[in-house]
Image (cartoon, rainbow, N blue to C red; front, side, top):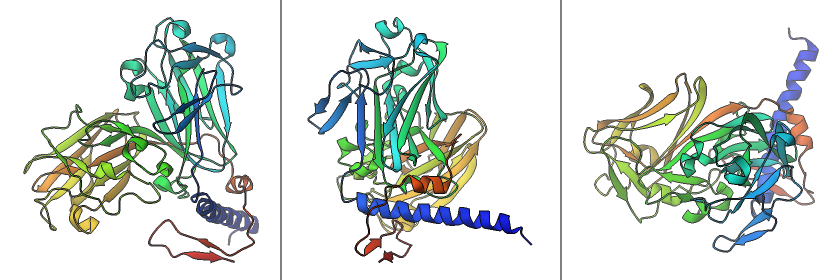
Length: 412
């Protein structure tokens, strides 16, 4: 028989977990009628600036942290609106942090890094970045070689009222940051509120839109702002075997709603192979870590119109993770989105993602790879609940489940 204290503690944790889940649903229903919280800081800048094409306000970097400001020597590909950076010298201490007040919720936190003459004598610095007290990014030699290595993001759940990002010197140059974005996304995006996932950070390894004409942000693709303005990188130029490009302008069904709010355009292009040919991608990763893999499909070929015409297996490092994938069968028809997700432990430093044909060739629309990082410091579920800004309930309110298989609940 369980000890009463143990039973009570277990019951309390279960109740707190349930309440946290319920409140997150309720708060999102209230918030989704408006715009998500979006904070964009142009690091080192002394003035606010409005990007008219996207109506984005970049805030001046004043009163957030220490350090010094410096101009950027050249325009940054992918972020030409940013012209300054903030850097931290040894005299500023080994750790310097931004603490930004935000509502309870789930956020995409993105950085752009660069360096120059004033801040680092034109030598590439190496340093670490932590989020919510957890080491997430390590800038290693070569990170400045291309924009997609110096623009990084992660998905984080904030339940203490502030997003905290800290820069840690490694003794190899001065940490330098060009921009910090904190963009609210759906509370249930990427299943972050599943109990085993809530206190994890999903660090983006790669987010690919297969055969896209160019890389871009969600806003460039008319994506819903609740998607966090994610950056999608074309796979043109990536090693993936012999493949062809396929694009369509036809509408895609079931692609763009809650909770992940994917842009339709990522399903309107695909990398394909001929009969019997495999497709593969290789990613450099940290060893002995869990990786959450999200795979996107929509059958957009006019030749494949019914079930069993295209079937393939999916492997990670030669281990099967999905078998006999028939896009039309699983999605319910052509031009209909299908998303598959699997979390795998990878021991080596390379993640090889292979699509192996069973019937005809391969078609892949988009790929997302996230490293799953356990938070080093977490509050309890009930401490998270105390941070919620509970709205007044003077009228009946509906809790709309974000999962179609779950019934709605009504609060009165």
